[in-house]
Image 1 (cartoon, helix red, strand yellow):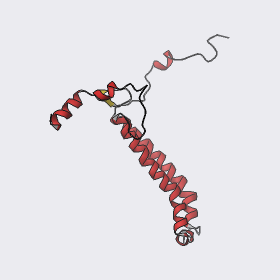
Image 2: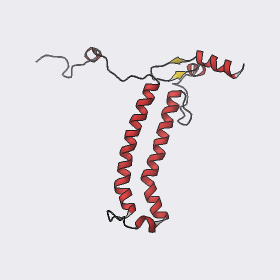
Image 3: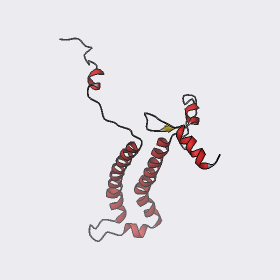
Length: 145
């Protein structure tokens, strides 16, 4: 079987799941309740794409948070010189403003990437009308006062 026939057979054996992932015949035959979960080898394309986003964000976060501290230890003279405009040392500015601001930008970046991933795999988080009323539970036990 050549690659094009193999790819065609694989695409025919895929089905869409509610989690947005697609399953091959091998993935459908796995009993996930008894299977060992490996975070470094995700089982569905959705999980692989999501894990790629998470690892990219983690590396960026580590550089933003620990980069200025590491650079201060490696090149203390350059990082400790006062900035011309603000008068603060560069390492102070990067740790006090850069790390929290960078983390906030990373949160925004993650939300955008996750929305794009949900759209790619057809995941819809919209709540349909009527379903909230049907599933509603009385918090007081259902008795009228």
